[in-house]
Amino acid sequence: MSEQASDHSNVVVFPPVVPIVTIALGFALQRLLPLGVLVHFDQFDRVVIGLGLFVIGALISSSGSVTLACSATNILPSRPTLKIVSNGIYGWTRNPIYVGGSFAMVGVAVAFALDWLVLLQVPAHLILHYGIIRREERYLEQKFGDEYRSYKARVPRYLLING
Image (cartoon, rainbow, N blue to C red; front, side, top):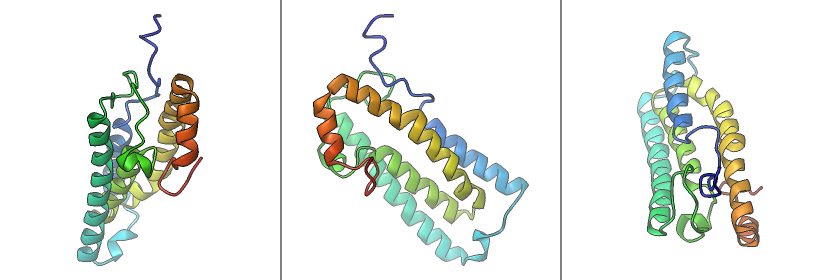
């Protein structure tokens, strides 16, 4: 295998698959075996709060995508990362696309009263953390060395949580 063919983060699954499958599974389980917790909250309040969380998540996530695109590096984890991007939203979190996706999923759960989707956040985040994010970090540290380690020391992995 050539060096160029292996110049990527080797994630276990294409990242958008995790939230898509999690949301679909949340809807399916809610329909088959409703838990009935969120449905007890006022529907209007749920929709407003859920929509707000979804919009915040979409803005964070899209800001991350746009920043990467404007920085002339690859967004897809199957392609080589060309440089460390630390400006814009990447000065606040090393993983804005995943952080935003999490906010958006919680927003969907609240708006649609999907108790199962709230519960499914735990396995979804474990898959994201260990199967995607940690692999991306190992790849970036191997490829960029001290530059990435310095960035990692300055900017938290998830908004306020560094690791």
